[in-house]
Structures are given as structure tokens and as C-alpha cells.
Amino acid sequence: MAETILKGKDFILRHVRMSDLESYHKNLNDRTIAKMMMSLPYPCSLNCAKKEILSNLKQYKERKPTKEAFIIDIDGKSIGKLSIKDISYGFLKHKAELAYWIGRKYRNKGIMTEAVKLITKYAFKKYKLKRLVVYTRSFNKASRSMLEHAGFKLEGILRKNKWKKGKYLDDCIYALVR
Image (cartoon, rainbow, N blue to C red; front, side, top):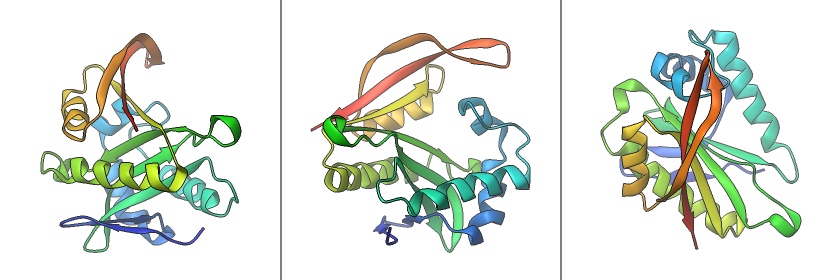
């Protein structure tokens, strides 16, 4: 898969590279991010971040990838990531899921809202989607607000949808349809 670059006002979205490891790890290794992501431990070791990057690099080589990940790059540093995942092919080719995170220092600056708008437009066009969904924890007010600013609509709350660290967690499901 050829690298795609999407340009934002103060950042670019581009595919993940192994050279991102240091800044990727620095921004990903955050207790708040780990609380929101099911598979991410805290603290996240450098090896954990490396495995994440290698997983993304593997997807780029597949003829019909089920995931495409983009780094939010500011001045050559990886400050966050967005993934279009569970991309459906065949008769279900109309939908995918969006997932994202951003480093603590870069939150509440409008970066993620702009990045989500860019990646959404890209995903609908490239994959000819009719539906893009996002699952976010019900207590994650910042993410919920950002999604609404990006045009997503709340479709419902999935009660006790996930189990993490001895607790059931509720998820909100947001979607954008074309």
C-alpha cells in the first residue's frame, strides 16, 4: 500500500513508520490512554509500543487490509494515532470502525477533531463506506464532545460492554453515515 498523507492545519496524517517508535512510545505511555484502550497495559513498555507499530506495518503489506493506521505528525514527531479498522469487504463492504488516541500535551487544542474529520472523509472515499462507527467509554466526555463536533451522532449506550481491571465498562456508540 502506498503511503497516504493527509494535511491538516498544523499537522499531517501519515502511515506509521518504525522511526516513530520513540515519540510514539512517549505519547502512548499514558495512564489515561490505557484506561480507554482494552489491550494497552500501563505502563506501556518500549517493546509494547514496538509491537503496536509492527502490527500496523504488517497491515500495509496486505492486499485487502482490515486496518489502516495513521500517525498524527507534528514536526516529524508522532503525537497520536487514528486507525480505520474492521474494514469490511465483500457484501458487507459498507462499514468500518474508527479508533484514536492523542498524547496528553496535545489534547483540547482541536487537533483530534480536525484529524477525525480528515480521516473520515478519506475513509468514506477510499473504502466507499456508508457507515463509520466509534466506540468510546461513556465516562470519556472529551472524546464524546469531540465526536459530536466532528459530525458523529450518538446511537446508543452499550451497558457493561467491556471488562477491564475488575470492572464492567459502558461504551457509547457513535456513527456517521453517508
